[in-house]
Image (cartoon, rainbow, N blue to C red; front, side, top):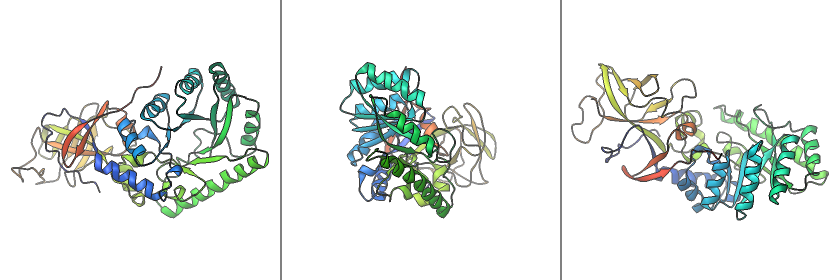
Length: 376
């Protein structure tokens, strides 16, 4: 699963370089669609992992028309790509509220929405929408156990929904439940946690429907519990990492069945000791989280990553190990040789790069832009 074919035309590529395997990305898209039984209206993937217009286009080509994002620039990028339905899973406060209202006014062909969990934030968004002469779809952001954002799915959420009725420029669309804490490797435990969350959210939806809030949708989950949300007919599942996947999720959640589709090309810049190489891949080019190993060396079996700094990373190599080469196979590693690293956490890794080089059949074929900037 962690293999990476050496790139044949890497000689003129500056390293470190972010690489996207196009065929693996397409495979991951097909896998996600298969997991919802082909019912793409139940998919709402999160673009924060890749921030890439070309990957959005692949999703659109696969029939995925609902999308989720975290920033206004990501929402704008989705609209520019032709996405029909965009949920910003982030509460709009301060000037963000006005920026969202303007975006809705400027791009009426896309249905934008955002989350709320606070009355004052809802009031500010309503005022911004009123000034622009638009209505904003909103989702109640629920705290289902993570403790990061959201309102408790109890009487407090019911009360907030009642209060939203007083805002003429807001329209309640549904409930948003992100369970980022639901990430244990044990499949059965992850499933049980998902079922408990769904029970709570559905109970809340039932209460709201009884007081007049009809046809409320549910958006739930990230990548680890995606298989369980994918089989729920009344849930829009919103995985993010699946498009590119990474070493962290592949090693912890093999049941997902996605393929790591991104790697970092790096070159050896020094061999200070016989069993140590240093590469040009520091934590300014690969995510510094989580704690522990930030990546795995794909084409150097049994290598152990060592200390990393801003522009350097030392790697301990096993005795008599050699880098497979097209020509003098079996020669020792030397300064200038390329290695390929699969990141432990791909999402913040992508955000460190302006572009990704596309790889097809071991050949770099082009470059895809990463929309890492923010509005404002």
